[in-house]
Amino acid sequence: MTPPPFVISIQSQVVFGHVGNSAALFPMQAAGLEVAAIPTVVFSNTPDYPTQRGRALPPDFFADLLLGARERGLPERADFIMTGYIGSLDVALMAADFVTEAKAINPRLVYLCDPVMGDAEPGLYVPEAIAEVLRDRLLPMADIATPNPFELGWLTGRDIATLTDLEAARTRLRMAPGAHLIATGCALNDSPPGHIESVILDADGPSRHPVEHLPVALPGTGDLFSGLVIAGLAHGVPLPQTVETAQRLISRALDHARTLGAGEVVLCEPDFRRALLALKAE
Image 1 (cartoon, helix red, strand yellow):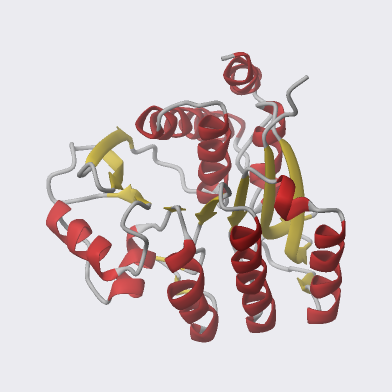
Image 2 (spheres, one colour):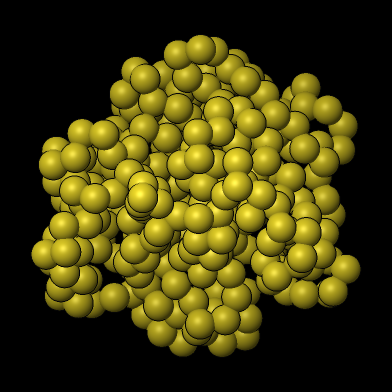
């Protein structure tokens, strides 16, 4: 029997809500993937509430988890590795070392870097030193990167308003020539009214994927998007179709949350779960 696709996911974890691994883990597992989830921080909830408990993992604790992953041979087994939110410089540097080592050991490994560092409304919400590790060490190794326009603008020093801006920003990133940049949540000057876009930029040229912009903003949609992209690619779905499927499922989750009046993305809606199972069947 062929083993399921295997993913190492290095990002945040919360007790309540759906961000980081707490957003990406379930969709990947429901789609039939095996996932080793390594937390970078453990919080009670996102900062959107009056209080937040927990902290970034102490460096020695995080290093011990990575050692355990090495001892179990996870880098050799993995088909994909992904990184998301990182809460301390020490952890960022160790994550970069781990990805470097994993890609050297396992050349077939596909690395998705979600450079979680900020957004238009709050601005940069990680220390600049962490953002620099993302820019200078993690993104150059990425086979796929999923920044939002703010993150892409910070990383490249360029405002993002047009497709030309995106193409110029792609050239300024030190990603490999064959890597895929997916700029998420773009509202460009010529985007269809009432829509936002994910734009894929790679050697094949730009590919634009608009989706209706729902009047609801909840944390964790970027983390959910990255997990859904990995789930699609693991089952051999072409990247453009994978992006459109991810957008459709996120819209479903957001719309269901709006219907319930929930303050978090909802992952338990029946049609959402059925779509993940159908992806596994495909």
